[in-house]
Length: 414
Image 1 (tube, rainbow, N blue to C red):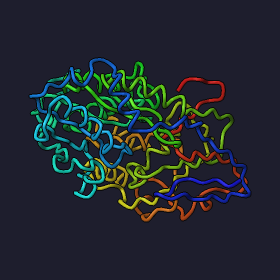
Image 2 (spheres, helix red, strand yellow; image 1 turned 90 degrees about the vertical axis):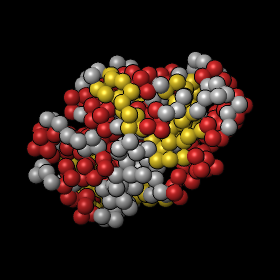
Image 3 (cartoon, rainbow, N blue to C red; image 1 turned 60 degrees about the horizontal axis):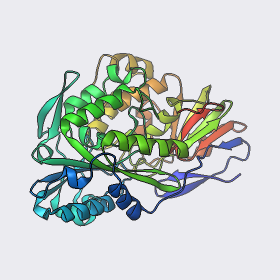
């Protein structure tokens, strides 16, 4: 059997002739034409139309995603701007903000690639320049000052499986992407991440998702334009009230991405596509999505294998560096997990989740440009996938682990 998994922008062909290989690929759904689907979504939004949300004399901030999300922000911005100009807005009334959270700022070239013709009115979010706009559950909600100064806040986003929020998108682009450390510290802290319902693929009765939605109300996120996708391509576009947008697109994604598997496996190859394979912080999502998802089919003695080049190493942003510091200075996963249960700096939550996984499962990263760094972070490194898997193993290959929801055979919920 010839099996291929992502490696950067290419596909890596695996050769495991002595292994029993099963491939978990979701049905993928039927792709849509982005331009027409986006316009249709704006024609039939959830809640008030954009023309009822924005007045001709108001300023608008549109928060978009950064390079860690494969959102077609340039096209979404074009479609939004068509409607905003029809309402009567001029270019000087528009501010585009790249929602970084605690990731690194985009370079000028990356901003152009992300927003296309809107480079002249686009800035990177700066978490050091925030204003408190209210509280949720006692947590101060801080927003980038250029978002606060706008009369109306809009956002783009990608609704895809998310380790904590169930699915990303909706108010998350603004609350986390253009927020301050306060809400990132609270929402990504051990107390929140340890709550029932905070898990991949779940939005109903998910405390993390609930916090994002309520913080979005405080932040004034009135209207969003989001997409969802699968390995087959973009599957849907929805516009309007953030909660309803996420609900619609999560249902579309769940139907397209769920795969039922049975039995247990000696090794699981968890593929991760660009741009998530750029650094270890992002690529580590692939094994945690498998091990800490709705159903983990890896045997107790098995290993998770992640092919990723990691050209940025651990990652260059504040959050990525905190992640690396926690993992690289820890003696072992158990002691790190126990110490981090007492709290950690925003951004380090990925180390907490990785430590939780590594207590029970081993992870080997292959094909990377920085094997020494990988091994500093309590994981193993191997030159190739074949080197990481014992001959005769039962192997499950999940080519796109970030866009596959593994379910126990017979279970219909994610």
